[in-house]
Image 1: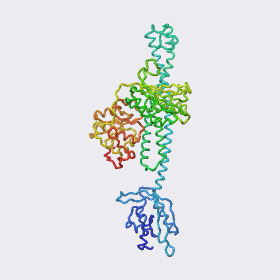
Image 2: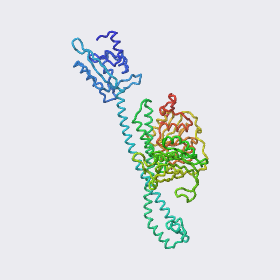
Image 3: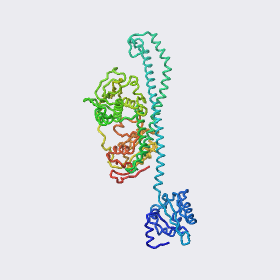
Image 4: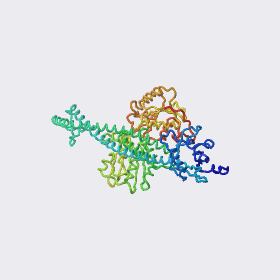
Length: 639
């Protein structure tokens, strides 16, 4: 073989990955590109056997690189013909200076003979192409497709489960209301008969209404009515037992919603982190589908909790006019150009106490319903005014002063039968696939949970008017949040006590918080967190805790921890906790993250309580970077 300086320099500078092997499979020459790809030096491999320099990875018992390459080289020596091998997994040993061990590689080799004067094979030119990145991308694509299919299947199953549980809860509420009303009427009648037997009077035409007594009735008639009530008592008790069973199903649905929201938070969190890993110019439709499925499932869960009266409320003293005005621009874009939006807001409107997000949801649902009733255009009127409801004036509205929001449209209206069912969960007049039938049920649930109600008035061809009543409040508006909690320095890095009983969710939260620079102390339940908080002498800047946990609940943990750390800020997270959080505590001394939430919402909630506004990078949250892209100070993390 010609080894003159000019030929050797030309060969070594070739851009391809080449080795020249002797007939006894020793390395005679190597290109610079081959040395770089295999992390070797020329003086360390020349003259050595190829399999001594490049052995199989001992940590991979299934490795076949040496066996396959040896078979190919021996075939070339025997036949004198070029042999092109299939793609091989052949790991490369890293130098000790780079940590040692083996690095996974995939090669596409070709072995070509160089014949001597008598036709014998003197050398073999071993040429390879490194296809590692291509193989990895192919594997990642298969894994991503499998993950997408799995998550989509689970999302469909969860949506079906939500619909089923929602129907059971709605039926349970209806039966419980009917049975409670009947039982209350029974006891009221018996009480009247026993204590006022000589004073009972019934108005004409109201023989069955014991609240309107005018004319005396005989003792025999009273006894006859008591006899009929006793005869019905067994039936009423059975209805009550059945209603109690259905009420238990409703509580179960709330628990399912809690677990479901935990799962959604994990899916949404990792999907957000995967999206952040992508380059800005790359999009994954499958990832968008996952996030879209999470959003739909989250909306269904929130609607279920709303009309079941179990959705948590962040109550504030609000000006209903300000809420409507703040949404006006968005509502105009929502309804389209063929519908004229008119607002008529009272100047002296009373204040209400409600959750602003839920109040906006009521307005949005009513406006969307009105828009859909006017496909050919029309007029939509939003009006506010003060109203006073006197006792007995309206059956469904308690006496009192209210701020009234009416939403009127000039659409096609509805029949009396349709109007009587319009607030039933899953009842809809829209085509299949265009509505879930939860919008108005959700709006009614929010209004009633806020102490008010929602009514409808409509006629076919004459439009519809929805009236939402919200009781006045005399509470004073509290100051807007934004000050730094006592005991915190306002720095970016903090020590956070994380309490979450679901391990996958706890692992995700730990990853996001530590990547953002926080030191995290983990606890799987309230007892562990309490022991850690009492034992630790260093400061704890924030408690991040679930609300519903086995054993000690989140609010109970907060009460006990604040006895030793009175200024400890708290960030609650839950998807179902209305009966467990003290509302005033939630309003004045803690923050709240409704599940499901993403990494950005988590970090913004943490920063708000720590008094660090605007520190979440728009494109780097959960990745340990500041807004300028520099690595942030991570601090120490304890698990």
